[in-house]
Structures are given as structure tokens and as C-alpha cells.
Amino acid sequence: MILVTGVLDLQPGTRDAYLEASRPYIRAARAINGCTTFVVAADPIEENRVIVHELWRDRGALTAFRSSGPSDQLFSMIERVDIREMHVQDPASPERILAWLATSDLAHSEAFYTRFFGRPPDTRPMHGLVEWMYETSGGMQLFVSPEDAGHGCVTLLVQDVEHERARLQAAGLAPSAIQDGMANRFVQLHDPDGNRVVLHGSTSWKR
Image (cartoon, rainbow, N blue to C red):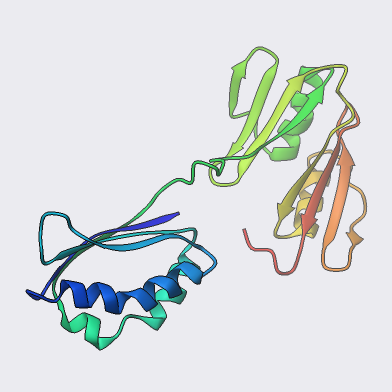
């Protein structure tokens, strides 16, 4: 989410005209898919000031609106601009998504995934739980739960399926042959409990 907020100080006596001339741009902004809030309002204290408050879901939506831009008439009424832009966390959006797989034998499965990821677990948050984490793309949890073991599946998106398959073979694991889908390629293998792990690659995928 992108928050745009601040004030515009206007030429004396032009505020009503500025607000009236702003109406088409406010309507246009609110009609853009990606604009959640767009307000230009009179400051209740300063008679030549307006308050700007915008909230956008993504940069593309904001750029689409800015490219159309307000008119020269609006710009001519502005004396000073004090507008700030900042990124804010959408409270409805998770910060990170973690995959979860169950195991009946943590030591055995941990050894498997240590070879799979090429490193030991990054964290051990509690007894019976280990995690491999990636800074921007989430991670995977492995948890002792014998009744659930063997019923899970996790898919990882990778850039180069051939490279990853060769790496897994070199680590002593047994990935399947590469399979071709309509717009992707993938390999799969099973961990010691029978959970399925899929490596999915596409020519259009970028990390």
C-alpha cells in the first residue's frame, strides 16, 4: 500500500476554485482499480490550504493516475507543496506465508530437507518444529504430527528446473524426470513420510 499525504498552500482567494476544479480528477482517481482513498479537502484552520490524502494498493495504479496529471489551471493556483509518500502495510495482507508439512520422525525428515534446501534449519521455534526461511518469499515449517504425516504437498517456484534437479540428485535425493506442462516444467519427489514436494519452473518466472 502506498500512502500519499500532505498539504497544498494556494494563492490567496483561490481555494474554492481549486476544490471545484479538482472534482474531475478526484472522480478519475477513485475510478482507478487500485485507488482505495482519494481526498482533497479544505483545511479547517488555514484558509488558503487544502489537505491531500491518497491510498493506493500498488505503484502501477498510482503511476497510471499521475500520468494523466492535473491541469495547468490547478498548478497555477499552488504556491507551496508539502506532500509525502510512504509505504504502509495493508493490515489484511500477511507479511509472510509459510508452508507446513508434518512428519512422524523429525530427525529423519530434517536430514532429508537439509539436503533438499542445501542447509540445516534456520530456526527451531519450539520442540518438534524446525523452519527454513527465505527473507522475502516465506519459508517452510516441518512439525512432528504422526497422524498428519504423508498427506502434505508443497510447491516451490524456481528459475531453472534442470539445475535444481541436478542439484537434488547430487545431494543424494531422487527427483522424478522433468515433466512438461502447458506453460511450465516441473519435477517432484517424496520425503521420508511420503509428503510430495514439487519444483515448478516457467520460462516467464522471475525470482
